[in-house]
Image: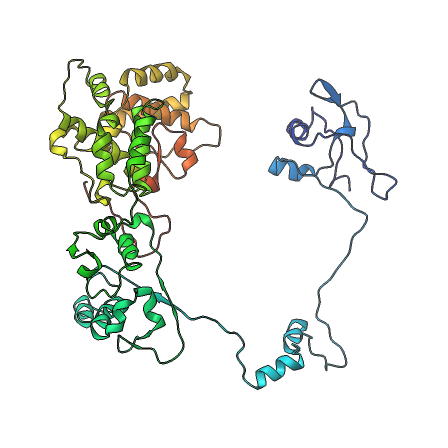
Length: 495
């Protein structure tokens, strides 16, 4: 038992590593078991102590452990030997009653399932086991020509198009039903299933003969754009006979479903967001103002973001000229309002892209004209070149002498390869704590101080945070989180 469980400090001369692990993980308050029936572990006075918090502790403070497990896992592993134990064996049982055959107790349990008399009678008379009430009809809707098509992997595209060219959907047949049945003109799309039945085989709505059903429009998130406003209109527009009639208000056909919603007063005023941005200028930086504007855009909180942009863009772009002067070291630099507006839109676009969105997702918002500011034509290059070179050079010089001989050899080989433009692949391997991240950071400082572009990529978010301007591979290269055989790389060759 002494070889399995120990409650003593090992000899620091003979077992130095074990002694350090025990003192690190297995020192505890006084413990032991006696009159309650538990074993008392051997705790000899061997003269071996360990100082913790200014107090010398001996074998009385050691939690029982197994030396082999402790050295392997180097963690707190308390191993106890209890007095109560059961010895069990598993074997095939043969008896005279079953003729020497093995007894499958699990099969016996399933074969002998018990049904009460009431349940047996219910099933014999073939009564319904469950019942759903009321009936709910899921109602689909879509843009013109944007309905879903069903096809197999082996179907050819021309055949799919020809097969579904004249196919109707539940939504389009609802419009045709309003032309055919006059009393349907008084019903909302969601009220239609209460008076009509949709026949999928013939793709048509026919008057309901009995019963009723509740219609429910499929859920659409606010951030999905125009399709959300189409759903909003379908909750108020009755007897629509075409897509144009859905966005027709008081005889006026609006250009978009959102504009029709605004004409009906279904959208709130954006003045509160304009006031919020103006009030925030007193306490926040211009960068934080742009973050606030992007948050409002990404959450689709504003009904007319273009109007909010028109009234607040000067506040959002207030620091653009200052930073451009500092970056170019041209204190006399002057920019037109149009250039400031474009540069501010570029900053907003960068923040949106960090959230997986773009200004192109908002049809009413202006998109920056890159021709007006050609040096911003490639946002990725500008982002990777936007560093304080002097500070990077100071960081590099201050840490270069801290490299070990082996690290310095790796550092010089990589720098030489880059300087001579020889494509190479390097794999730096080492245990945790061998300063691989330190070497990577130093290489970044050196190359970026020479105006070179370095992409620091890691497989996990925690690892990317340790690298200068580091990003995960999924974020930088747009790698899907869930991969299958159908996904392909979206990065073009030589892009």
